[in-house]
Image: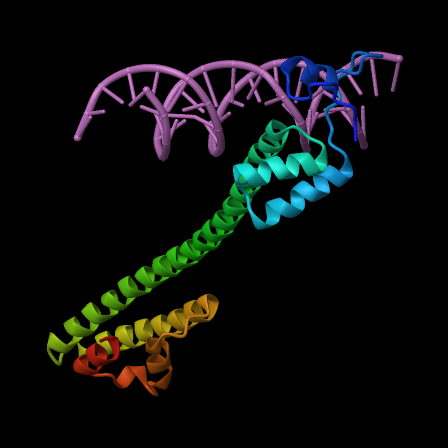
Length: 190
DNA sequence: CTATCGTCTCCCCTTACGTCA
DNA sequence: AATGACGTAAGGGGAGACGAT
């Protein structure tokens, strides 16, 4: 243990203790053993009772104030590291949510596009159902072509999006889109 | 009862030094 | 050897708790 002078608790001898008289450099670092003991106690209690602080200071050959300061600085360092950890956890969570949002956003865009296409198809079908017999043959051909194209495009889109919504399955189960009646279209859609 | 004062402890920010690349 | 970045012991100030008067 270091010689702390005749009155180790006076301000003067305290300063003398920390000033090396030979080279005027201040002794700052604690020894490995001191730090090891402090760390061990900090793991079980981050705040010291006054009595325990005095005892620890005595055991380690330090001033009680030094022990108190060490615990204060240690708590600050611990909070800082904890903050860093919390930040990383939050950032990972945000990144995950952000990518999921992007995915859903693209999916939404694709589905909106498909809905618009299907609406157009429904409108065409509705028109063809309400028109007279005279123009039926030519309209049937047009709608039939449109239906085939829509069906193909829709399935391609779904393949690209890897979407498993039930609507796709329904579409695939329709054996002949050309034979769909107006109400069947609506059933399929709804 | 309450207002005031002194003391202690905490937190936060900053400073000064030690260490290392 | 010089230097800049980083870690750490300690200083200082403000705030809150608590006991004594």
